[in-house]
Amino acid sequence: MSRRIVVVGHGMVSARLLDELGRLTADLSEPRLDVTVIGEEPHPPYNRLLLSEVVAGRADLGRLTLPAPPTGNGMTVRVLRGVAVTTLDREHRVVRCDDGSEHPYDTVVLATGAAARRPLPDDSQQGVRVLRTIDDCRELLAACSYPRRATVVGGGLLGLEVACGLATRGADVHVLHRGGHVLDRQLPPEAGAVARAALAEAGVRVLTDAELESVRHDDGRPVGVRLRDGREVPTDLIVASVGISPRVEIATAAGLPVRHGVVVTDELRSPADPCVAAIGDCAEPPSGCSGLLAPGWAQADQLARDLAAGAPPDDPGPAAGTGAVVKLKAVGVDVVTIGDGPEPPAGARTVTLHDPDSRRHVQVSVSAGRVVAACCVGAKRVAADLTAAYERRTPVPTDPALLLIDGLPGAGVPATDDPTTMPSGTTVCRCNGVTKKDIVDAHVAGACDLSSVAERTRATTGCGGCTGLVRGLLEWMDDVNPPNGVAEPKHSRNDPGNTRDVASCTTQKEITR
Image (tube, rainbow, N blue to C red; front, top):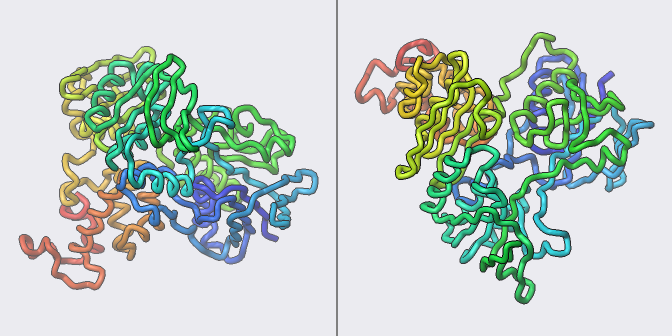
C-alpha cells in the first residue's frame, strides 16, 4: 500500500522535495508514495530568487517556472493550486482546505515558507510594496513603468538588488538602512563603505542609520517618507525589504511547538508529532532558521530520502550547495561573502586589501592552510577563485596576502568562460554542485537546451548566476556534437579533426580538459 504524503506549500523547497522523491522512486515498478501538494498561489512553482532580476530587466517573468519533477512508477503526484489549508487535524491525520477538500496523510510536510515583513504598522502600509511573490513582482513592474523617485527600505541583499534594478529603469533611488552600513550582516564597515560608493556610481543613494517613521500621502498615493530623526525623502514608489517571518500559523493552530519557526529535530520531524515534518523557511531545526535556499534544499533532499524509504541508506543525495557563500545579484555592484558573518573567525589569520579609490575591498581569512572566510567587493575574479578554494578546500599559499589580487592559482575556476579551456571538474552551477562534465554528459544524453538541462541536472534553478555559462556550454556542445549529427561545427573551421562524436571523446583534452 502506498504511503500518503501531503505537502503544504508549493515553493522552491517543496519543488525540490518532489524532484528528489521522483529521482529516488523513478525505477520502482509500482507506486510507493501517493503525494498531494497544496499550494496557495495559483502558479506552478517558480524561482523566487530571480524576481529581483526581473525588476532589473535581466530575467523574463514568464521563464521562472521550475522544471517538473521526474516521472516514474514509484510515485503519484496530485497538485492543488490556489487552495489554502485551513486545518491540520493531527488526531485524525487529515488536512482540510478552504475548497472543502480533505486529505488524509501518513506524513504531512509543512513547506509554507515565509512572509515579507512590513516596516510599519498595518494602518500605515498604504503604498508600501514588497517583493516576495510573482504577483508582487507584476505589481511592482506595473508601478515602475514610468519611474521617477523610488525608495527602498532595507539595505540587505534583496533591498540592494531591487534598488539597483529600479535604477536601471531610470528611477532616482534612495535606500533607507537602519544599520551603520549596507549589508552589515555580511560585510565589515570598511567593505560596506566601498559597497556604498559603488552603489552611488550605479545611481543608488544610501541613507544609513535611517529608520522609517511614516509615509506621507497625497490623494492616496505616496509622495514622501519621514525618518525618526526628522529627515524626509520625497518619493513616488516605496519597496520594503526588511526581512521575512516564517509562516507558522498552521503549525500553531495544530498545537505544534513553534519558536521563530516550526520546531523540528535533526530528522526534520516535530518533537510533538513525528508524522509532521517541516522544511525550508518555515522550519526551525536545532541549527536555527537560516532564511537561505541552500539549507532548505538540503533539508528537502534529506527528507526525501527518509520518505522514499528505498534509497540506499548511505546515499548522500545530490549536492545542495552551501549556504556559507552569498552573492549580491545587483547591477553594477559585485559583492561576494564567504563565512558566517562580517567578523573574521577567531584564531584565523586575516589579511585585507582596502582600495576605496578603485571601489575594491578584499578580506581573506585562512586557517590550517585553507580559506575559511572572505569578503570581496569589486573583485569578481578574486571572489570566484576564493569561492572555489573554499568549497574545494584547496591549500592556500604560505603567505595568504598573495590571495588578495590574484586569487588562488589552480583553484579550478577558469580565467575565462571559454569552454575549450575550462577543466571538466569546474563547478558551473554552485547552487546545485553541477560541473562542466555534468553539462557535457547531459548534452550527450539529449538535453540540448536550458530547460532540459535544468530538468536533468538542476543547473540554473538556484540563483541563476550560471545561466550565461550554461548557455555558452550548450552552444559549444551544439558545435562539437550537433544534435542532428551534422559534422560541420564552427570549431572545424580551425580544427578539422574536432568533428568526431563527443560521446566517444569526452575524456579528450578539447572536451573535458
